[in-house]
Image 1 (cartoon, rainbow, N blue to C red):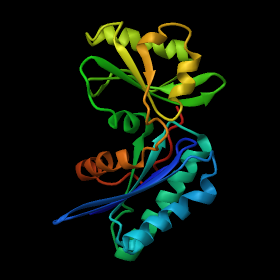
Image 2 (cartoon, one colour; image 1 turned 45 degrees about the vertical axis):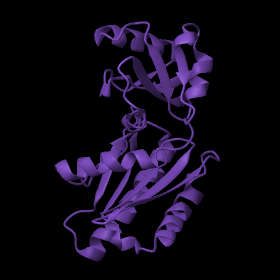
Image 3 (cartoon, one colour; image 1 turned 180 degrees about the vertical axis):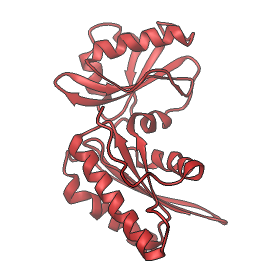
Length: 231
């Protein structure tokens, strides 16, 4: 199975390609941390990975992209690109539906963090105006909804969630996502129990692939009218 992942949800653009065969699995990934210039860069990265792998674009079996939350324009660019590729693959191979799956951004970011019983994970994305998109995860499970709040309020909700899942209000909170450091700068107190992941700006395209494959196997492709989730 060949899977292409496109992450344009934030200012870190990443694209990944996985080729899985009976003899093994190979992965290619490209990341550009140059700001919101995805229109010019996303297809260059896709073309580069396809050329390096030696496959034809129509051999791709599944295309996945971020559904949101994230940059309004970035989400639209990613979904439009993924849908265009998936439609062309479906037409070329006479598939019943475009092979595309969109994924919740915060869940993808959290999935890349090792599950530890004593640590909570808070993936965040800068939503501007001193607010952040964020969601809490504990022991590998989502314990809050996707939220759009100032950093101190998100942190308070995480503390409450820690009590609810019996980790504790004083558990260490690992901040993930490309704007983790920016989030930490906005926190007014409790900073000694909060730290940003060192790999915050490496992009999330590789983390999308196993989630997308599982979702595609369990319920098939997105509906034709699926669109971004802006919260």
